[in-house]
Length: 308
Ligand SMILES: *[C@@H]1O[C@H](CO)[C@@H](O)[C@H](O)[C@H]1NC(C)=O
Ligand SMILES: *[C@@H]1O[C@H](CO)[C@@H](O)[C@H](O)[C@H]1NC(C)=O
Ligand SMILES: *[C@@H]1O[C@H](CO)[C@@H](O)[C@H](O)[C@H]1NC(C)=O
Ligand SMILES: [Zn+2]
Ligand SMILES: [Zn+2]
Image (cartoon, rainbow, N blue to C red; front, side, top):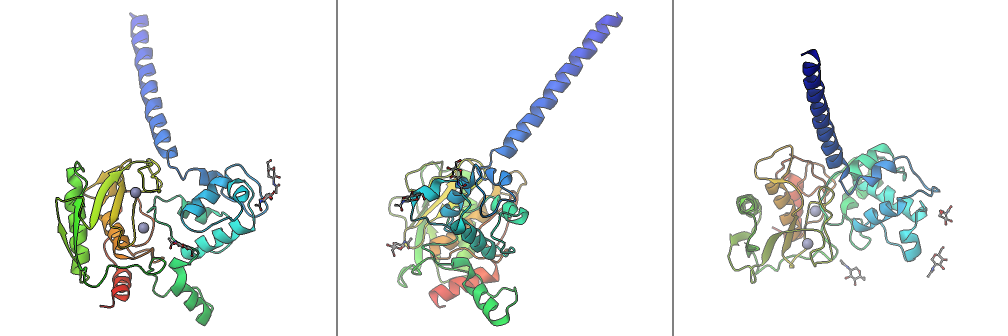
Protein backbone atom coordinates (compact mmCIF):
# COMPACT_ATOMS: atom_id res chain seq x y z
CA UNK A 1 0.00 0.00 0.00
CA UNK A 2 2.70 2.42 1.06
CA UNK A 3 4.78 1.65 -2.01
CA UNK A 4 1.71 1.97 -4.30
CA UNK A 5 1.00 5.48 -3.12
CA UNK A 6 4.71 6.28 -3.32
CA UNK A 7 4.67 5.08 -6.93
CA UNK A 8 1.66 7.22 -7.66
CA UNK A 9 3.27 10.19 -5.97
CA UNK A 10 6.49 9.91 -7.96
CA UNK A 11 4.55 9.46 -11.19
CA UNK A 12 2.56 12.61 -10.46
CA UNK A 13 5.74 14.46 -9.58
CA UNK A 14 7.41 13.37 -12.81
CA UNK A 15 4.43 14.52 -14.83
CA UNK A 16 4.39 17.84 -13.07
CA UNK A 17 8.11 18.33 -13.71
CA UNK A 18 7.69 17.44 -17.37
CA UNK A 19 4.87 19.94 -17.77
CA UNK A 20 6.88 22.66 -16.04
CA UNK A 21 9.88 21.98 -18.25
CA UNK A 22 7.70 22.14 -21.30
CA UNK A 23 6.23 25.49 -20.29
CA UNK A 24 9.61 26.99 -19.47
CA UNK A 25 11.08 25.65 -22.68
CA UNK A 26 8.22 26.99 -24.80
CA UNK A 27 8.67 30.38 -23.15
CA UNK A 28 12.42 30.41 -23.81
CA UNK A 29 11.88 29.38 -27.38
CA UNK A 30 9.35 32.14 -27.85
CA UNK A 31 11.70 34.74 -26.37
CA UNK A 32 14.72 33.75 -28.40
CA UNK A 33 12.99 33.65 -31.78
CA UNK A 34 13.28 37.40 -32.37
CA UNK A 35 15.47 38.01 -35.40
CA UNK A 36 16.99 40.89 -33.41
CA UNK A 37 18.08 38.61 -30.55
CA UNK A 38 21.71 38.54 -31.73
CA UNK A 39 22.07 42.16 -30.57
CA UNK A 40 21.85 41.05 -26.94
CA UNK A 41 25.19 39.24 -27.20
CA UNK A 42 26.85 42.25 -28.80
CA UNK A 43 26.05 44.56 -25.89
CA UNK A 44 29.12 46.56 -24.90
CA UNK A 45 31.01 46.15 -28.15
CA UNK A 46 32.76 49.12 -29.70
CA UNK A 47 35.20 50.20 -32.39
CA UNK A 48 38.31 48.04 -32.77
CA UNK A 49 36.60 44.83 -31.69
CA UNK A 50 36.27 41.80 -33.89
CA UNK A 51 33.33 39.66 -32.68
CA UNK A 52 31.20 36.98 -34.26
CA UNK A 53 27.86 38.49 -35.34
CA UNK A 54 29.12 42.02 -35.89
CA UNK A 55 28.32 41.33 -39.55
CA UNK A 56 24.70 40.92 -38.44
CA UNK A 57 24.80 44.34 -36.79
CA UNK A 58 26.14 45.70 -40.09
CA UNK A 59 23.28 44.08 -41.96
CA UNK A 60 20.76 45.46 -39.47
CA UNK A 61 22.09 49.01 -39.85
CA UNK A 62 22.27 48.57 -43.60
CA UNK A 63 18.63 47.46 -43.76
CA UNK A 64 17.47 50.52 -41.84
CA UNK A 65 19.53 52.93 -43.92
CA UNK A 66 22.47 53.69 -41.64
CA UNK A 67 25.31 51.88 -43.33
CA UNK A 68 26.53 51.40 -46.85
CA UNK A 69 29.93 49.89 -47.61
CA UNK A 70 31.57 50.44 -50.98
CA UNK A 71 33.69 47.33 -50.32
CA UNK A 72 31.49 44.26 -49.94
CA UNK A 73 34.22 42.45 -47.94
CA UNK A 74 33.81 44.95 -45.11
CA UNK A 75 30.01 44.75 -45.24
CA UNK A 76 30.21 41.04 -44.43
CA UNK A 77 33.08 40.88 -41.93
CA UNK A 78 33.05 41.10 -38.13
CA UNK A 79 35.25 44.15 -37.70
CA UNK A 80 33.76 47.02 -35.71
CA UNK A 81 35.31 49.66 -37.95
CA UNK A 82 35.06 53.44 -38.27
CA UNK A 83 32.07 53.34 -40.63
CA UNK A 84 30.12 51.09 -38.28
CA UNK A 85 30.87 53.38 -35.36
CA UNK A 86 29.58 56.35 -37.29
CA UNK A 87 26.42 54.43 -38.27
CA UNK A 88 25.76 53.52 -34.62
CA UNK A 89 26.21 57.17 -33.69
CA UNK A 90 23.69 58.30 -36.32
CA UNK A 91 21.24 55.70 -35.04
CA UNK A 92 21.72 57.00 -31.50
CA UNK A 93 21.06 60.60 -32.60
CA UNK A 94 17.87 59.55 -34.39
CA UNK A 95 16.59 57.76 -31.30
CA UNK A 96 17.60 60.47 -28.83
CA UNK A 97 20.23 58.25 -27.21
CA UNK A 98 23.66 59.34 -26.04
CA UNK A 99 25.83 59.33 -29.19
CA UNK A 100 28.61 57.07 -27.92
CA UNK A 101 29.17 55.13 -31.14
CA UNK A 102 29.35 51.93 -29.12
CA UNK A 103 26.67 49.32 -28.53
CA UNK A 104 25.71 50.32 -24.99
CA UNK A 105 22.75 48.82 -23.14
CA UNK A 106 20.28 51.58 -24.08
CA UNK A 107 21.17 51.27 -27.74
CA UNK A 108 20.81 47.50 -27.73
CA UNK A 109 17.49 47.72 -25.95
CA UNK A 110 16.17 50.22 -28.53
CA UNK A 111 17.52 48.25 -31.49
CA UNK A 112 15.89 45.05 -30.26
CA UNK A 113 12.39 46.53 -30.29
CA UNK A 114 10.04 45.23 -32.99
CA UNK A 115 9.72 47.82 -35.71
CA UNK A 116 8.51 48.91 -39.11
CA UNK A 117 10.68 47.50 -41.88
CA UNK A 118 10.96 50.81 -43.72
CA UNK A 119 14.45 52.33 -43.43
CA UNK A 120 14.93 55.37 -41.20
CA UNK A 121 17.30 56.90 -43.71
CA UNK A 122 17.07 56.63 -47.48
CA UNK A 123 20.12 57.36 -49.64
CA UNK A 124 22.20 58.93 -46.94
CA UNK A 125 19.65 61.60 -46.05
CA UNK A 126 19.45 61.87 -42.26
CA UNK A 127 15.71 61.74 -42.50
CA UNK A 128 14.80 61.57 -38.87
CA UNK A 129 17.01 64.31 -37.58
CA UNK A 130 16.72 67.36 -39.81
CA UNK A 131 14.94 69.29 -37.09
CA UNK A 132 17.19 68.06 -34.34
CA UNK A 133 20.35 69.24 -36.06
CA UNK A 134 18.95 72.74 -36.22
CA UNK A 135 18.14 72.78 -32.51
CA UNK A 136 21.63 71.53 -31.78
CA UNK A 137 23.23 74.24 -33.84
CA UNK A 138 21.42 77.15 -32.24
CA UNK A 139 21.39 76.17 -28.63
CA UNK A 140 24.09 73.57 -28.28
CA UNK A 141 21.56 71.77 -26.10
CA UNK A 142 19.85 68.47 -26.58
CA UNK A 143 16.22 69.24 -27.29
CA UNK A 144 13.93 68.50 -30.15
CA UNK A 145 11.87 70.56 -32.55
CA UNK A 146 9.62 68.92 -35.13
CA UNK A 147 10.62 65.50 -36.26
CA UNK A 148 8.46 64.24 -39.02
CA UNK A 149 10.31 63.39 -42.24
CA UNK A 150 9.70 62.66 -45.90
CA UNK A 151 11.15 60.19 -48.34
CA UNK A 152 14.09 61.19 -50.51
CA UNK A 153 12.82 63.57 -53.22
CA UNK A 154 9.58 64.11 -51.26
CA UNK A 155 7.35 61.89 -53.41
CA UNK A 156 3.64 62.60 -52.94
CA UNK A 157 0.29 61.97 -54.59
CA UNK A 158 -0.52 64.58 -57.26
CA UNK A 159 -2.99 67.30 -56.25
CA UNK A 160 -5.67 65.88 -58.55
CA UNK A 161 -5.37 62.49 -56.86
CA UNK A 162 -6.87 63.16 -53.43
CA UNK A 163 -9.50 60.44 -53.67
CA UNK A 164 -7.78 57.09 -53.30
CA UNK A 165 -9.15 53.56 -53.42
CA UNK A 166 -7.82 50.68 -51.34
CA UNK A 167 -8.38 46.96 -51.59
CA UNK A 168 -7.40 43.85 -49.68
CA UNK A 169 -5.81 40.91 -51.42
CA UNK A 170 -8.65 38.40 -51.91
CA UNK A 171 -8.55 35.94 -49.01
CA UNK A 172 -7.12 38.45 -46.51
CA UNK A 173 -8.10 37.65 -42.92
CA UNK A 174 -11.50 39.24 -42.35
CA UNK A 175 -10.65 40.73 -38.94
CA UNK A 176 -8.10 43.10 -40.51
CA UNK A 177 -10.65 44.91 -42.66
CA UNK A 178 -12.30 47.10 -40.01
CA UNK A 179 -9.05 48.17 -38.27
CA UNK A 180 -7.44 49.13 -41.58
CA UNK A 181 -10.58 50.93 -42.73
CA UNK A 182 -10.72 52.87 -39.44
CA UNK A 183 -7.09 53.89 -39.90
CA UNK A 184 -7.86 55.24 -43.40
CA UNK A 185 -10.81 57.19 -41.96
CA UNK A 186 -8.55 58.69 -39.27
CA UNK A 187 -6.12 59.94 -41.90
CA UNK A 188 -9.05 61.22 -44.02
CA UNK A 189 -10.34 63.20 -41.04
CA UNK A 190 -6.95 64.94 -40.72
CA UNK A 191 -6.06 65.55 -44.37
CA UNK A 192 -7.64 66.48 -47.70
CA UNK A 193 -7.59 62.79 -48.73
CA UNK A 194 -10.64 60.59 -49.19
CA UNK A 195 -10.32 56.83 -49.07
CA UNK A 196 -12.82 54.31 -50.30
CA UNK A 197 -12.65 50.56 -50.25
CA UNK A 198 -12.99 48.68 -53.52
CA UNK A 199 -13.16 44.99 -54.37
CA UNK A 200 -11.12 45.65 -57.51
CA UNK A 201 -7.72 44.68 -56.11
CA UNK A 202 -5.86 44.96 -59.40
CA UNK A 203 -6.87 48.57 -60.06
CA UNK A 204 -6.89 49.87 -56.48
CA UNK A 205 -4.53 52.76 -55.69
CA UNK A 206 -3.56 51.05 -52.44
CA UNK A 207 -3.22 47.28 -52.05
CA UNK A 208 -3.18 45.72 -48.58
CA UNK A 209 -2.04 42.17 -47.86
CA UNK A 210 -0.39 39.87 -45.33
CA UNK A 211 2.91 38.49 -46.57
CA UNK A 212 5.49 36.10 -45.22
CA UNK A 213 9.32 36.14 -45.45
CA UNK A 214 10.42 36.62 -49.08
CA UNK A 215 7.35 37.80 -50.95
CA UNK A 216 8.70 39.17 -54.19
CA UNK A 217 9.13 42.92 -53.56
CA UNK A 218 12.80 42.79 -52.55
CA UNK A 219 12.05 43.41 -48.85
CA UNK A 220 11.56 40.02 -47.19
CA UNK A 221 9.96 39.80 -43.75
CA UNK A 222 11.77 37.95 -40.97
CA UNK A 223 9.31 35.66 -39.16
CA UNK A 224 7.91 36.38 -35.67
CA UNK A 225 9.24 39.58 -34.04
CA UNK A 226 11.76 41.85 -35.75
CA UNK A 227 10.05 43.71 -38.57
CA UNK A 228 6.25 43.92 -38.46
CA UNK A 229 5.06 45.66 -41.63
CA UNK A 230 6.10 47.96 -44.44
CA UNK A 231 4.61 50.26 -47.04
CA UNK A 232 5.99 52.08 -50.04
CA UNK A 233 6.28 55.80 -50.75
CA UNK A 234 3.82 57.51 -53.16
CA UNK A 235 2.56 56.52 -55.59
CA UNK A 236 3.41 52.81 -55.29
CA UNK A 237 0.51 52.06 -52.94
CA UNK A 238 1.64 48.73 -51.45
CA UNK A 239 1.07 47.98 -47.75
CA UNK A 240 2.17 44.63 -46.31
CA UNK A 241 1.73 43.21 -42.84
CA UNK A 242 4.13 40.46 -41.74
CA UNK A 243 1.83 37.43 -41.67
CA UNK A 244 4.10 35.66 -39.15
CA UNK A 245 3.24 38.08 -36.31
CA UNK A 246 0.40 37.71 -33.84
CA UNK A 247 -2.10 40.44 -34.75
CA UNK A 248 -5.10 41.71 -32.80
CA UNK A 249 -8.11 43.94 -33.40
CA UNK A 250 -8.27 45.04 -29.77
CA UNK A 251 -4.97 45.90 -28.05
CA UNK A 252 -3.78 42.72 -26.37
CA UNK A 253 -0.39 42.16 -24.67
CA UNK A 254 0.32 39.05 -26.74
CA UNK A 255 -0.16 40.66 -30.15
CA UNK A 256 0.52 43.70 -32.29
CA UNK A 257 -2.35 46.10 -32.88
CA UNK A 258 -3.63 46.02 -36.47
CA UNK A 259 -5.04 49.55 -36.47
CA UNK A 260 -1.90 51.14 -34.96
CA UNK A 261 0.36 49.61 -37.59
CA UNK A 262 -2.15 50.58 -40.29
CA UNK A 263 -2.03 54.23 -39.15
CA UNK A 264 1.76 54.08 -39.38
CA UNK A 265 1.95 52.40 -42.78
CA UNK A 266 -0.69 54.71 -44.29
CA UNK A 267 1.61 57.56 -43.21
CA UNK A 268 4.27 56.02 -45.49
CA UNK A 269 1.74 55.47 -48.31
CA UNK A 270 1.00 59.22 -48.16
CA UNK A 271 4.69 60.21 -48.13
CA UNK A 272 5.78 60.45 -44.49
CA UNK A 273 9.04 58.93 -43.34
CA UNK A 274 9.92 58.07 -39.76
CA UNK A 275 9.78 60.55 -36.91
CA UNK A 276 12.08 60.71 -33.89
CA UNK A 277 9.18 61.84 -31.67
CA UNK A 278 8.34 58.80 -29.59
CA UNK A 279 4.63 59.70 -29.36
CA UNK A 280 4.24 60.12 -33.12
CA UNK A 281 2.57 57.36 -35.08
CA UNK A 282 5.56 57.61 -37.47
CA UNK A 283 8.04 56.61 -34.73
CA UNK A 284 9.56 53.36 -36.06
CA UNK A 285 9.17 50.92 -33.13
CA UNK A 286 6.12 49.19 -31.63
CA UNK A 287 5.56 46.95 -28.62
CA UNK A 288 3.20 44.05 -28.15
CA UNK A 289 -0.14 45.41 -26.99
CA UNK A 290 0.74 49.01 -27.84
CA UNK A 291 -1.96 51.15 -29.43
CA UNK A 292 -1.37 54.68 -30.68
CA UNK A 293 -3.12 57.34 -32.68
CA UNK A 294 -2.05 60.32 -34.77
CA UNK A 295 0.12 62.88 -32.99
CA UNK A 296 0.54 66.60 -33.70
CA UNK A 297 3.90 65.79 -35.29
CA UNK A 298 2.27 63.46 -37.84
CA UNK A 299 -0.34 66.04 -38.75
CA UNK A 300 2.26 68.82 -39.03
CA UNK A 301 4.25 66.53 -41.31
CA UNK A 302 1.43 65.72 -43.70
CA UNK A 303 0.39 69.40 -43.77
CA UNK A 304 3.92 70.44 -44.68
CA UNK A 305 4.15 67.82 -47.43
CA UNK A 306 0.86 68.76 -49.10
CA UNK A 307 0.65 72.45 -48.16
CA UNK A 308 -2.83 72.48 -46.69
C1 LIG B 1 39.06 39.73 -37.36
O1 LIG B 1 38.98 38.31 -37.34
C2 LIG B 1 39.16 37.71 -38.61
C3 LIG B 1 38.91 36.23 -38.47
O2 LIG B 1 39.56 35.71 -37.34
C4 LIG B 1 40.53 38.04 -39.16
O3 LIG B 1 40.67 37.49 -40.46
C5 LIG B 1 40.68 39.55 -39.24
O4 LIG B 1 41.98 39.88 -39.66
C6 LIG B 1 40.40 40.17 -37.88
N1 LIG B 1 40.46 41.62 -38.02
C7 LIG B 1 41.03 42.39 -37.11
C8 LIG B 1 40.99 43.87 -37.39
O5 LIG B 1 41.54 41.98 -36.11
C1 LIG C 1 38.11 45.30 -49.98
O1 LIG C 1 38.76 45.17 -48.73
C2 LIG C 1 39.65 44.05 -48.67
C3 LIG C 1 40.16 43.90 -47.24
O2 LIG C 1 40.59 45.11 -46.72
C4 LIG C 1 40.80 44.27 -49.69
O3 LIG C 1 41.67 43.18 -49.64
C5 LIG C 1 40.18 44.42 -51.06
O4 LIG C 1 41.20 44.73 -52.01
C6 LIG C 1 39.13 45.52 -51.09
N1 LIG C 1 38.44 45.51 -52.36
C7 LIG C 1 38.25 46.61 -53.08
C8 LIG C 1 37.52 46.45 -54.36
O5 LIG C 1 38.66 47.71 -52.71
C1 LIG D 1 19.29 56.85 -54.42
O1 LIG D 1 20.21 57.58 -55.17
C2 LIG D 1 20.49 57.04 -56.45
C3 LIG D 1 21.57 57.86 -57.11
O2 LIG D 1 21.50 59.21 -56.74
C4 LIG D 1 19.19 57.01 -57.26
O3 LIG D 1 19.42 56.45 -58.54
C5 LIG D 1 18.15 56.17 -56.51
O4 LIG D 1 16.94 56.19 -57.18
C6 LIG D 1 17.96 56.71 -55.11
N1 LIG D 1 17.10 55.81 -54.36
C7 LIG D 1 16.06 56.24 -53.64
C8 LIG D 1 15.28 55.18 -52.93
O5 LIG D 1 15.75 57.39 -53.57
ZN1 LIG E 1 7.63 52.87 -40.91
ZN1 LIG F 1 6.37 43.64 -48.98
